[in-house]
Image 1 (cartoon, helix red, strand yellow):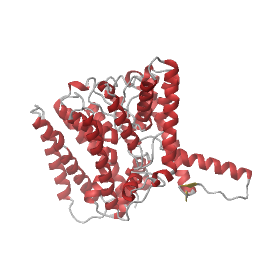
Image 2: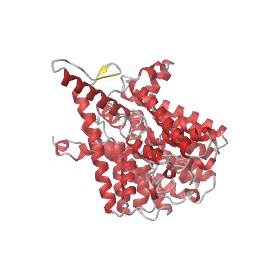
Image 3: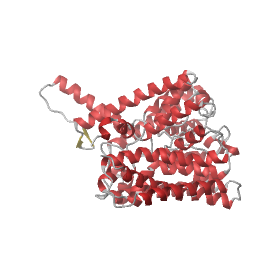
Image 4: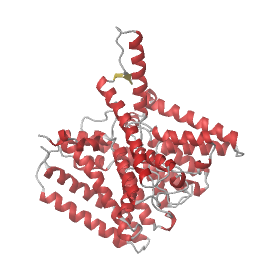
Length: 482
């Protein structure tokens, strides 16, 4: 039986955490003497009142169990998106709540799709809040909750797994709360380094903060209408390319490398090797295609190819050029790799490299068994056996991912979106990528999408961020039985 009091208590604490996070744009608004400080203060007050009411009305030592963990994760992402939408809606930046919710959900799920037609007229404090939602959502509000206020190892582990999915994650501590703390320390350290490097490139502090938050969380919200391309700086582009790639690496794996002071952990990891070499192959092909069809110098083509390939592959969504206008082969590759994500337990979305790795090894094992019916062949990743149950779960996830993309395309088409926009919009939302094609492409935005379309896209973003299962399991009858 689900204990609703336990769920509400956890949601109350999460609201308090979001209220603290809102202090960053509030302080910035005060520092810059903006006229919207009251908007953030009002939202903080809502968080404090509602969060405190939930916590104190349900107080008591209540360990979180597995089922409650799943429900908390799903409801928390919806709750923080509702709260995150309030500053946009109250200030009038968005006249309708659907657009404000879309922007907040896009931020927390690190999708980076924006309904803002002109981002450069928006006050800096709101741009910082948008990017803060990226940073919180990148590693996960739930991971922060577990790090600060873990109530039980069983429920905490369930929530951590829902946030950082993967069949072969690196274990970094025997205690769930310690694991969450180490992950946040690693994440914060990488963000700090990125901010410093961007400041060296001539960015002002607010922009460096926003782009660092977006790069390491593989988010994609920009402070200029032309995204990163608006800076016309090779140095900035290479720095952001590097940190987008880092954002696509498993965070537990990076922590293990830092803690052991050895890069051998990375080199031995099969998923990382596939991610690294696949990225190099995509960059090489796109660079060659650009060289054959444009008059730009090799260095510029390489930089454009590297930035956009890494951005799409890690589902970040930053842009330096309108790849809608690129040669057909490059455009096709960049659209297709939206369905290929980076590593498990990274901040990237889509179908992870590990899924394709398991699928390939499973297929290879199946062919071997067909040729040698009496032989035994196990699927192994990183030297460890992957059980048939895990293989099946991974393949079922990929199947569900493509089915939901297909259904999303149909649903968006019914709202009036042309086929190309409906297809790439659905792919982009469930992959948490950001740009689609056409009017929602790298040179466009989602402002013209209908209210129904924004709700559909918001749902797809949530499903993609929580790896589908975490959301759908809440709607199964068995979940609510004793």
